[in-house]
Length: 259
Image (cartoon, rainbow, N blue to C red):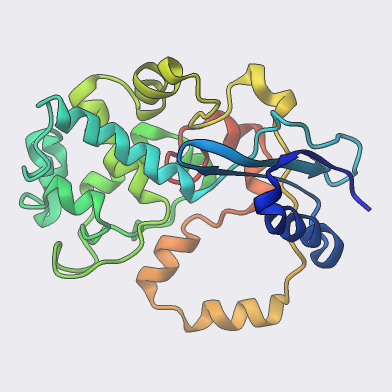
């Protein structure tokens, strides 16, 4: 039995039971869960291992890549600027990022970036992981590309591009990349242990991501049926546990995926 640490209010013992079952029945390696009710923690549990070799126990302060959860804090940066009167969410993106007007995007609104309605779910040209780690290059390509659909007419998940699109608007308005803006304005003042990208000083606390075993043939069949825009969104470039464990990924700023 994997030791489970922390505390759980007796009213929420079902949470602890489900957490333990995740290890016992589903092969969980390491994890943590916190539940707040009316601002008060009623469950704060952690257990298992922080690496595939099972040499590092999962601690209370272990960090882990939370993928798309980073989209929320990135959007928060934009909303803080809007709240301060520095950013008009209903204004064209090009008002803050002139290069963005290329390829028929002069009327795309900031609110359409925030709501996955800008038609820029992925890049059309091949984009490598090394290029993804280059903020200037990725944003330049997004500014130059044409939308996959008429902006504002439909929604489509901007898996990786969301963070660069919203984040570049934050940078153009504040002069700071979203990770630094978030640190100065939100997480630092509130004492929140969350960053976009992984500071070198925290590398020893980061968990190694271990992907579950997958049916490669079935996965390939799914990918083969995907529309080009879905492939661009989810697979250009391909990401996953192996990429997320590398120094390049951890050092980069990918707000939609490496918080």
